[in-house]
Length: 177
Image 1 (cartoon, helix red, strand yellow):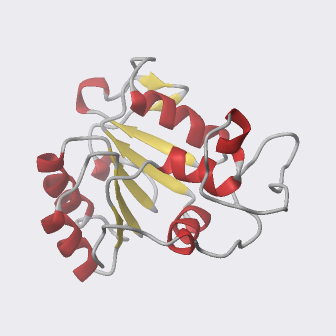
Image 2: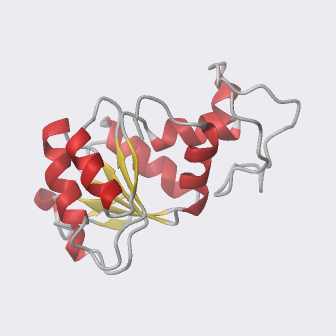
């Protein structure tokens, strides 16, 4: 995979099949992007495990913070990397020691490490680089359009809502544009 672009179907599949997320570089600082993404993904029904060695044993948004991926007490579907591009290789290598392996390595906006992607894909792990799961979820669910942002999705169907909020499961399968 080139990782220069991703089909909507690929991103939708990743988000629909993910249940647990380990967020490496999670911050307790309420103005940091990782805090917003953690809060959003929790609100969508994902189990999110903050990973931050400096905060280990504390809580962020009611979630216990772990010092490393190996400390998380259950299998991880997605490793979301909120670190710089150089650190992504080490995080990916750490993720590859987990049993079972995570299904996805997701590198946040501006984070790209082709060597990390190659290693993960050789092990059968899907990779997304330079994207944000919060933004992609909002775009694919139609939710991002509620604030006037162009979602690049054109559909006459309303998003499938539960109790007034969009929750895990992105609903219908609009064509990839």
